[in-house]
Image (spheres, rainbow, N blue to C red):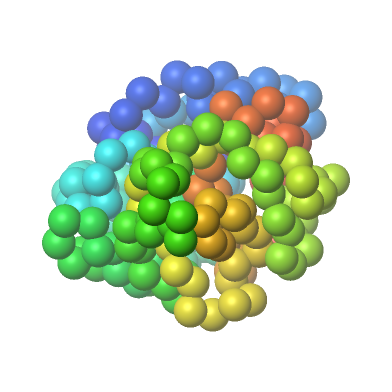
Length: 211
């Protein structure tokens, strides 16, 4: 079993790599590698797409990399389990509106737009710990209850048009999507590797998930 964390020069992947390696060892999920090698990505048993920065830059970097076609083959053709993290989750949307309208992967029926809290005194970016609200049961959220905390750092959020695809949210001057899912794909707006025991539990759940 191999989990590939896709490297398309979107940021420092060290902490994510260590968290996934730790939980893969704990649950017997095989090896975890950070890679940009298309052959490794296409042949992996599950994929993780992280992302830090602006949606247009990340989308352009991913599409320009050899990893893109391999990821599409693994996720869409081979139906390998996929996890998007932070901007990696946002890229799953139909479109991003950060700076300029940019096409996403179209895996989730939603649009990424700037967070606009109802309380204008609330700061953007949404940064720090927030309480998860579970909307829909999902295997990757097994053992995670409403009220548990996750760590967020983002200025843009996904507005999901198909309610069944949003499985958790948080309150930040209004609903902010925290977890999306469809078929063999799931996405976290927060950083599970920085979300203490709750985040590690979700990583372990993903590594055991067999959609």
